[in-house]
Amino acid sequence: MERIKLIGTVIAIVLAVIIVMVNWESQDFNLLVTTIKMPLAVMLFGTLAIGYLSGMIVGNPLRFLRKKSA
Image (cartoon, rainbow, N blue to C red; front, side, top):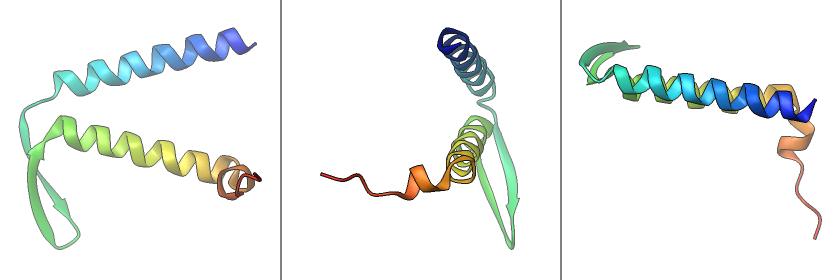
């Protein structure tokens, strides 16, 4: 089961990197009251990072927020 998770994770990471690397053209993004011009790849990577971190927090909040005992 661990091997399947590892293979799935590697495939997801490779696909995410490919999608991000293909989209380097600059775009305008409306963010609440301002407009930001940046490469689409940066926005995709930022969205991916925010989704991953929020999934870690929501998926297992006690493990993520618990301090490690020394």
